[in-house]
Structure formats: C-alpha cells, structure tokens
Image (cartoon, rainbow over all chains, first blue to last red):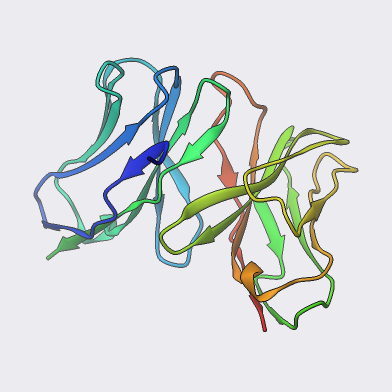
Length: 110
Length: 115
C-alpha cells in the first residue's frame, strides 16, 4: 500500500460543474496536506494547503481534511477548461517527510 | 522576480558521461530538494538540503550526488548516467522545513534522456 494514494484518472468533468479530487494517506500522524496543480510538461505549483480538520476555501477551490478517515479532498467549483491538469496531493507524515501521490489527471470538457 | 532556475532544460547524453544540472533560487530559502518524476510514479525525492553544507538522501539517491556550498545553489551531479536515469527532474526550494514552512517552489524542470 502506498503511503499517499490518488486515483490516476482521468477524471472527466463538464465545464461549470464541480470537480472532486480525493487523496488518502496511511500515516495517522500526518500533519500537513497540500494540493499542487501540474500542467503537462510544467512544474507543480501550490494551490492550497490545509493543516486542520474541516474545510478551507480559496476562491473556486475548497480543500477538505478528515483526519479520522485519513483523507483529504480538493473541490473545484465552476470548473473551467483551464483547470485541466494533473493534481498532486502531498502529505507531511509523522517523520516530517513530504510524501507525494502519483496525481489525478483532470479533464474539463467544454 | 522570485524564482527557482534550472539548467539545462533539456539534455540528451550518452551512458557514462558525467553531467551536472544546476539549480539556483533567489528567495534566500534554506531548504532545497531534487526530485525525479516518472509516469505513474509521481514525484520521488532524490536528495535534499536543510541548509548550507547539510545534505541528506531522499528516496532514490543511487547514482546521484549533490552539494550545497552556497545557500542559493544546489547542483545535481550524475557521475555515470545510465538509461534508467532518463526522467524529468525538478529542483524545489522552501523557506525552511517545519510547520508552516513546507510549501515548495519548483524550478521549470530538466528533461534528461540517457542513451
């Protein structure tokens, strides 16, 4: 079992709909959680981070953390074609190591 | 402009020919790291550095060397490249490494092909 798991996708979502991306992690002592976006052939860029249980909103993006169930989600409202990218989940575990998921490819269909 | 730069961006080389990929950041960050990214495997850390003269192995250090003689520079050295080191390489930096300082800034990437 990988320490951080994401569905590789592709996840296809119509333009204007809500895209929901999920990430599960195995280390219950994990403390910090990140979502990065990576366009094809480009470097990852940080979208959001979340440290506490619950929701954190930033514009069209909402990160949700549930430590009891060991998952973190990213919701993208009003999805745009420019949101089409691979979304990487990264988790700082109890050993202060940053562990990356393999990413979910998101396709927004016009 | 705050940024992480890498050179070269693209490199095709032959097995056994030593090469260096440079990485430089202008944000006065303490923490720097090298990753390789391969399809289906995500980002895997090669080496990292908490500060000048302090480096440590990541998950896949075999076949790589690094040095951190200055705060801004963190070159990646492949002494004898092999085809299994064909990959997309990213350098990243972070202000430090601790709570509230895990956010990393990535360079543009170096696509390396070893034939």
